[in-house]
Length: 335
Image 1 (cartoon, rainbow, N blue to C red):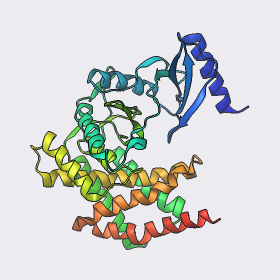
Image 2: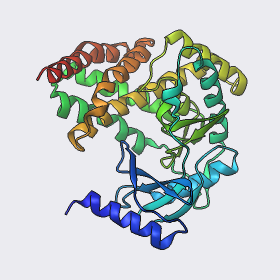
Image 3: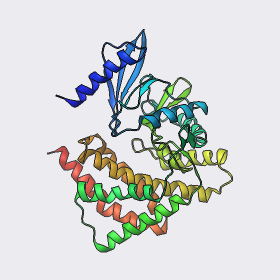
Image 4: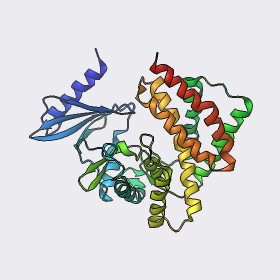
C-alpha cells in the first residue's frame, strides 16, 4: 500500500471527523524541500490549505506556536484553524498562489524587497513562544550545517578528493566563518526568509514556512532574502537595498561591520544550502534543486573573495568545485 496515499486518506478523514470543515477531495498544491505536503480543499465555499507534516520528521507544534507569536507581532501569517500534533495534520488559511517569487520583475523589485525587508525587524522581536525561548544558533548547529558542504556536495554528489592543502583551507575557512557568525548580535530569525516563502497579498506581504524559526544573527533573514538561492539580482542593487535597510533600522552599527556580518552569514548559509541541495537529490530523490547549486556557490565565491582571509577558500570553490558541478549537470542533461 502506498504510504503517501494512506497519509492522504488519513488527512481527509481527520478533516471530516475532527474539524468543522467538510472535505470531499484534496488537491495537491506542493511538496517542498522538507517532508511536508500541502493540499487545498473547498469547504462551505471557502478554500482551505491542509498540511501533511509527518511528526517523525516535522515539528507541527513549532509551526502553530510561531504562527501565534508572529501574528501577535503584526506579521501576516496564515491562521491555523485546526491541528493534531500527534498525527501531524493541520488546516490553515489559504493565501492563494501569488508567490513573491512569481511577482518579481525589474520594475517592482525595489518596492517589493523594501516591504519584505521591513518585516524582518518584527520577526527579530519574536524570540519566544508559549513553549518558551526559541532554539538558538549555537556552535553545534553551525558546525553541523557547514559540514554538509563536504559531506553531501564534495564527497557524495561530486566525489571530489581535495588535496591536503585544499582540505586545510576549507576547514580553516569554515571555522572562521562559524566563529564570526556566532559573534554577531542575535535576534529572532525566520531562517528561510526567501522569495518562495513569501506571498503577495494585495498591498501586504504574507509570510509562510516559519516552523524552523530560531534565535540567530541579525543579518540572517536579509541574506536569505537578498541573496536568495532561487533569485539573482545585480550586485549593486542588492547592496543598495541592504544599505537602505541598514540605515533605517541598524544605523547604530557601522556599515563596515554590518556588511561584514551580512557576508559572513551569506557564506555560512550558502555553504549549508549547497550541501542541502545535494542531500535532497541523493537522500530524498529530489532533483529539482540541483540547478540552484551553481547560483548558491557563486554567492559563496563572491562573498569569500571580498576578504583576504577567505580568498583561498573562494579559489577552491571557484576552481575545483563549481566547474565540476557545471560539468556534472551538463552531462546529466545529455545523458
